[in-house]
Amino acid sequence: MTDAELVAKYRHTEDLTLVSELFGRYTGMIYGVCVKYLRDRDDAKDAAMQVFEKLPTILKAHEIANFKSWLYVTTRNHCLMQIRAKKGKTTEELGSQVVENDFLLHQEQDSGLENDLVRLEKCISKLDDEQQQCVRLFYLEEKCYKDISTQTGFDMNKVKSYIQNGKRNLKICMEKNE
Image (cartoon, rainbow, N blue to C red; front, side):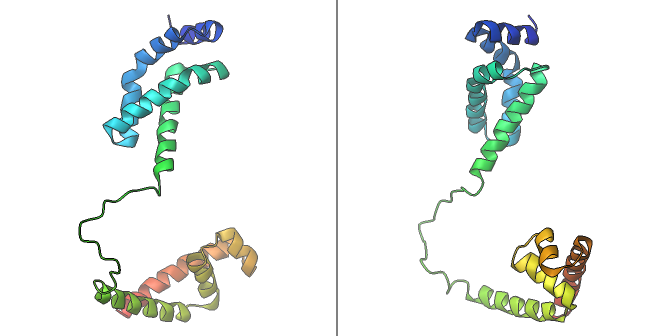
């Protein structure tokens, strides 16, 4: 039977062996997609099984024209959702010698950072008023173009231009004052 026939028959009978047959045809593809995106064989195996577990429910709920393409996209989206869920939840093993306050260890680096920040502030103050205002709002206050445009009254394209030119001028100024 074709993929479309198996899907149609499953929707009619809800026979899980039909879903197993479909999954069996594309196990290699599913696993390959999972390895490609997750870059870990164990995570890929788990993800492939999760896709398999979701198949009966999804096949009942949706009309699927091209099963293989649909399965590829569904698997890819499942992997991307896992990646997004893990983002920001990284774990790091701490070494046996953990310093509670590492200020003393990085004092030289901090003074270099302090000097860079002082130079950056001087360079920002040398920008044109419009560039200075847009750069501060965009980089320091993390506002989007639309919010900056609304707040300053500048046209959206002007805001983008002020930020781009301001960034270039800051780079030039920082390099001169190294």
